Length: 143
Image 1 (tube, rainbow, N blue to C red):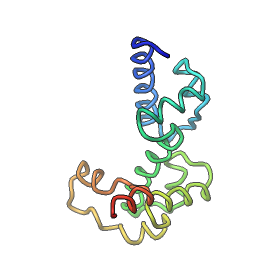
Image 2: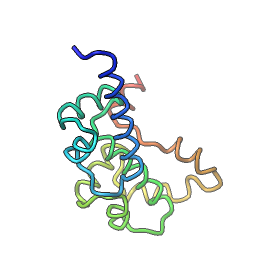
Image 3: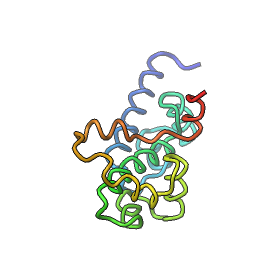
Image 4: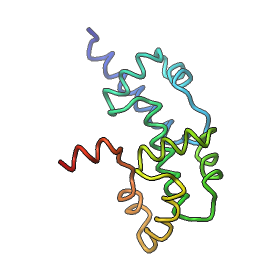
């Protein structure tokens, strides 16, 4: 069993990993590199990150990327492919699949439907009300 100082040290490392993902979401990031920089094994990082934040590091990274993609798609001045690469995804198929899982509609549909949805709303409010909720979470809270 880990002692309190080890646990606090892990929490500080996890916060740094999360902050790095938030900052560098558009860069090529992988769990092995994040773990190495945090002086943790990839498995330990993944387990502890999920305990602390509710999702694995890769899932958290993809959620950040999808959030940013939603903003770019609402602007309407970039194609879905341009948005995919702008947020750090290297595969349009993976991006589209993950976007659809998180948002509930494909990125092209979202772009058409939401182009004017946040006009006149402050960016900080728009970010909060448009944050993606996984379909599983949405259906669980609807019951």
